[in-house]
Length: 378
Image (cartoon, rainbow, N blue to C red; front, top):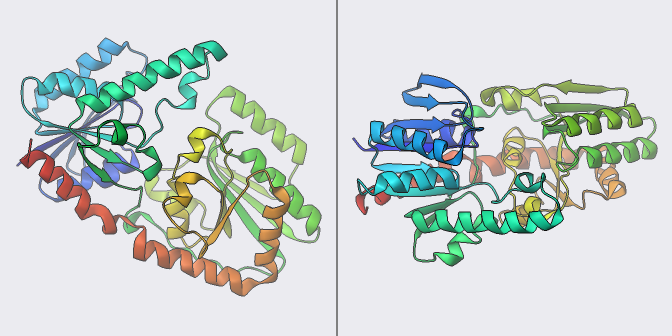
């Protein structure tokens, strides 16, 4: 029985992609699987997957590498799947003693904008270039690549074109999706925002669109559903100021819930939104929530991100828009209200497309085969 080890610094041990999809799938296929994360403390066994996780994010670079190396030596894996450069570096150190496959699963843009926030402008360029070189170094050390989306292939797929690669999108398993296709109620609408509450992720754009909608249809009862929380103090202040500025009457704010219950939290929503800003990092993203929205049968209105346009055509179940064009977004919502048959069609199409094209069953065999081949050819 081959052993697979997941190493990650920035993701929790029960991350939806790492644990609920990749690790559990490999376990079901007969592999021995372990996850080591430096995000939070937990040691134990979950659904047959061994977990060794520590709250180690504030430790030094060498401390993180040494901890990962200790876990590698203890578990003695045949394949290591890494989510960030530091795990790759640790895996390569272990790989010098035993020939293994080192798979770099790239799901985040690196360096992320959040990594550069604390630096002033000249230092942003310097540190951005430094992190870029670290990313290239991780690519050099890896034996295989998995890309979460087409737009994340740069730069590694271009600098190392001969390395085996797999595109593995963020499609969820149907067992984690609660289908809830709605019928529009006369003169009512429930609009939903989920995830990190911040300016960058579009909560301000969402509120501006609702404000325009209410001015366009003053008699319409608009209910607002928000599932998420602010991650930083500045984001919390920004959100508090928005709530004071707009003073919406019918607003429900829910705290983030467990992954398995995520789609249940927005069951009452009629339309789901993601109006994140159009910066470089966001443009190169394919938001995971999109697939959970359509799996639940919710029409979507999203920022017209390059990552989405390159991957799929959403016209059957939603719209891609300029997130700052509140007038257009309000008109799209009104169009659903005035044409409920269009809403019915979009909601059913969302679920249908999810079942046909955008669920884990469609891609799981290609993932397992890629892992098997990486071990066989190491």
